[in-house]
Image 1 (cartoon, rainbow, N blue to C red):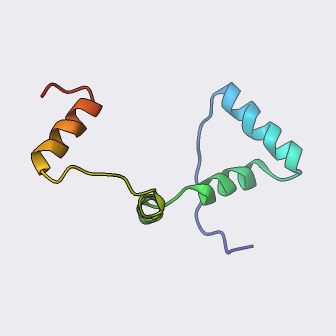
Image 2: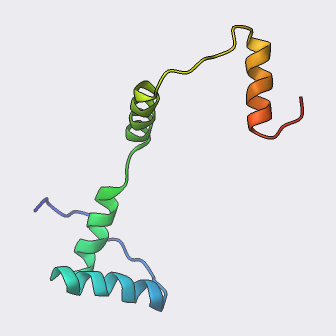
Length: 83
C-alpha cells in the first residue's frame, strides 16, 4: 500500500453514503478504499486525448469532399446548422 500522506474530509448525502458503504461491504474493504479506487479510475486529460486519437486512427476511412467549403456544408448539415 502506498504511503498515505493527505487526509481529506468529504460530506456525502445519505444515498451516496449508502452506495459507497454498500460497495465497501460487498468488496470487504473500507469506505476509504472504495473512494481511493474511484479516484484511481479517473483518467487524466492526456489519457483522454490519447484514447480519442486512437479511436480516430482506428476508424474506417470514408469519402471526404475535395472542396473544404463542401465539407463545411456537409458538417453543418450533419449538426443541424443552416447553410
